[in-house]
Image 1 (tube, rainbow over the protein chains, first blue to last red):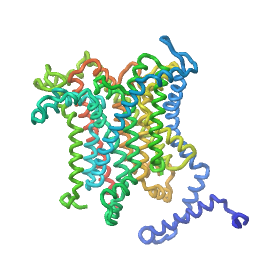
Image 2 (cartoon, rainbow over the protein chains, first blue to last red):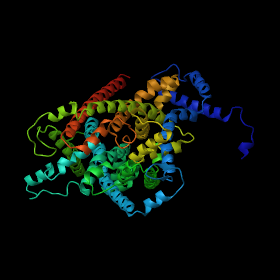
Image 3 (cartoon, rainbow over the protein chains, first blue to last red):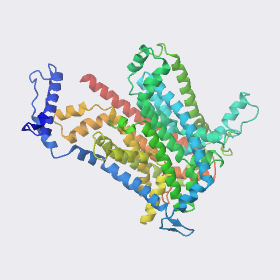
Length: 342
Length: 278
C-alpha cells in the first residue's frame, strides 16, 4: 500500500512495460547474436523498436483483432444467428393450408410434444447417435494412436492419413449408396460368405435395417473422430509416455492418467462432430433403413415440403435446443475453448 | 529414428491389424461401386456383372436424361472454388485475430461452434425462410453460398486454431526486430509459415462445399448442384450411372490430392534446403 502513495514515476505505466519488454528483447537478442551474428554490436540499436512502438500507439490490439474477425462475425450473424432467430419467431406463428400468419401461439409446440411419434423418433435418433459415437470413438482413437505413435516415418504417416481421407473426397451420397450392392441379398458380402461356406443362405438383415444405417454412419463419420484426436495426440511429447513407463505405470494407467487427460479436447471435439452429424442426418436413415426408421430431420423435411413452416420451425427449435444442451454438456466436461484458443 | 525392424510392442501389431481392417471397411464398398460402374449395358446396380462396358460413363455426358450432370458439375466446381477462396481469406484472418483476447471473443467462439453443430438442413431452412420473408429469390451464389459458408467458415477457423497452436511467434518477433512493417511481416513471414495449413483449409472447404447437399437443398433455387442432381437421380431411378459418377469424381479427387501432395512436398523440401543453407 505504501507503494501506491508514492508519486508516480514520470513514465506512464504502458511505457514502463514497453521499455521493460524492449529490455528483455534486447537481452535475448544479444544472447543469441553474441559472437555469431553481430560481434561488433552486442547491443543492437533500438531505433527500429521505438518507431514500432510509436506506430502501434494509434491502434488498440483488440481493434486489430476485431478487424480480423469482423467478416467472420458478420457472416455468422447474418447467415446463422438471424435465420435461427427467424425460425424461433415463426415457430409461434399460426398457419393453415393457404399460408402462415403472425401470431403468438404455443400450439405448434404442444402438438409436437404431445405426439407419441416425436418421442419415438428422438429415442431412435439418440440410439443411433450413442451407438455410432461409441464405435467411432473406439476406432478413431485407436487409428489416431496408431498413426501418431506407431508410424515413425512422417512420409508414411502422411500417406496413411491420405488413405483414410481419400474416400471422403467422394460424395457422401455415393458413399452411402455404395453399401447397397455390397450389403444386398445378392451383394458382394453375402457372396463372400456363401463362397467361404460361412452361411448357407444369404443374410437378409444386412441391408435396409438399423445395422445398415449404423455401418453407413461409421463409414461416413469415423474420420471426424480421427482428425481432432490425432491433432491432440500429436501434441503429446512421447517422453511423457516413457516417463510414465519408467515410473512403473502399466499401459492402462498411462492411458487413463496421461494420454486421455491430454487428448480430451480432441475426444470431445470429435464426439461433438459425430453426435451432431448423426442427429442432423436424414439422408442415410431414409436410404439405408428402407423406410423402417425415421429421423428427426426427415420428419422435419416432410413438414417443410408440405409448406407447414410454423410446425417445422417448432420442430427445429426443439432439435436445436436438444443438440445445444448435449453439446454444452460435452463442452462443460472439457473447456474446449481454453484448449484451442491459447 | 529406428527402422521398422526395431522391436515393436505387441500393440503395434494389434493396432496395425485394426487399421488394415478399417481401410478394408473404408474401401470395400467403394471398390464394389468402381467395379460395377463398368457394368455391361444390360446389367443392373448389383452383381453379377453382365459383361463390361463404358455405357454408364457415356450416359453421364449423353444429352437426354442425364444432360444435367455436366452442367451441375460445373456449377458445383464454381461454387466450391468461391466457397474455398472466401473460407481461406476470412477464416485465416479470423484465426490470426483470435490469437489475442478481444472483447466478444467468447461470444464469437461459441457462435462458430453453434454454426458448426447446427443440423445442416435447419441452416438451409432458416436461410430459405429468410429469403422468402425478404422477398428475395434464392440462388447459387447468394443463399446457397451463404448456407455453405456457415459450415466451411467454422471448419476453417477450427483448423486455424490447430495450425496457429504450432506456430512459433518468435518468427514474427524477429521480423519486427528487423524492422518489417505489419504488412511485410504478414506476407513474408506469417503466411508462408502457415501455408501448408492454409492449403489444407482450402482443400477441406472445397470438399465440404462440393459434397454438400443438406444445407444447399433448400437454398439453391432452380438450378441444382451435382450432389442435388445425384440425390434427384437416386429417388427417380437407380442405374450404374450413379456408380460411374462416383468413379469419375473419385478419379478427379485422386488427381487433385496428387497435385497438392507434390506441391506440399516440394515446398517442404525447399524449406529444408533453406534451413540447411542458413
